[in-house]
Image (cartoon, rainbow, N blue to C red):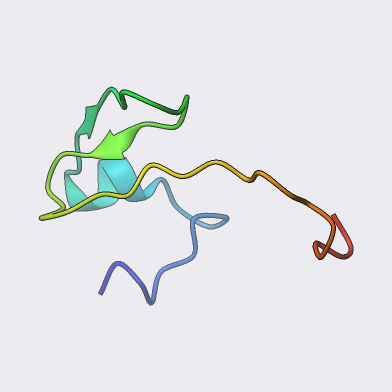
Length: 51
Protein backbone atom coordinates (compact mmCIF):
# COMPACT_ATOMS: atom_id res chain seq x y z
CA UNK A 1 0.00 0.00 0.00
CA UNK A 2 2.73 2.48 0.92
CA UNK A 3 4.74 1.61 -2.19
CA UNK A 4 1.76 2.38 -4.43
CA UNK A 5 1.33 5.91 -3.01
CA UNK A 6 3.48 8.79 -4.28
CA UNK A 7 5.30 10.92 -1.74
CA UNK A 8 4.81 13.81 -4.15
CA UNK A 9 1.05 13.59 -3.56
CA UNK A 10 0.82 12.82 0.17
CA UNK A 11 2.92 12.87 3.34
CA UNK A 12 3.50 9.14 3.75
CA UNK A 13 4.65 9.48 7.35
CA UNK A 14 1.38 11.16 8.32
CA UNK A 15 -0.90 9.11 6.08
CA UNK A 16 0.43 5.72 7.21
CA UNK A 17 1.42 6.57 10.79
CA UNK A 18 5.16 6.08 10.28
CA UNK A 19 7.76 7.30 12.76
CA UNK A 20 11.47 8.01 12.36
CA UNK A 21 14.68 7.13 14.17
CA UNK A 22 18.04 8.83 13.77
CA UNK A 23 20.59 6.99 11.62
CA UNK A 24 24.12 6.40 12.90
CA UNK A 25 26.07 6.81 9.66
CA UNK A 26 23.98 9.03 7.34
CA UNK A 27 21.79 12.14 7.66
CA UNK A 28 18.61 10.54 6.33
CA UNK A 29 16.10 9.30 8.92
CA UNK A 30 15.30 5.62 9.36
CA UNK A 31 11.70 4.40 9.38
CA UNK A 32 11.11 2.85 12.81
CA UNK A 33 8.45 0.42 11.51
CA UNK A 34 10.89 -1.23 9.04
CA UNK A 35 12.35 -4.59 10.06
CA UNK A 36 15.76 -3.69 8.59
CA UNK A 37 17.51 -0.57 7.35
CA UNK A 38 20.69 -0.04 5.32
CA UNK A 39 22.78 3.09 5.74
CA UNK A 40 24.81 3.67 2.57
CA UNK A 41 27.07 6.34 1.14
CA UNK A 42 28.01 6.84 -2.50
CA UNK A 43 31.79 6.45 -2.78
CA UNK A 44 32.21 6.73 -6.54
CA UNK A 45 29.74 8.67 -8.69
CA UNK A 46 31.58 7.83 -11.93
CA UNK A 47 28.65 5.76 -13.27
CA UNK A 48 25.85 7.98 -11.99
CA UNK A 49 24.16 9.69 -14.93
CA UNK A 50 21.62 12.52 -15.01
CA UNK A 51 21.88 13.71 -11.41
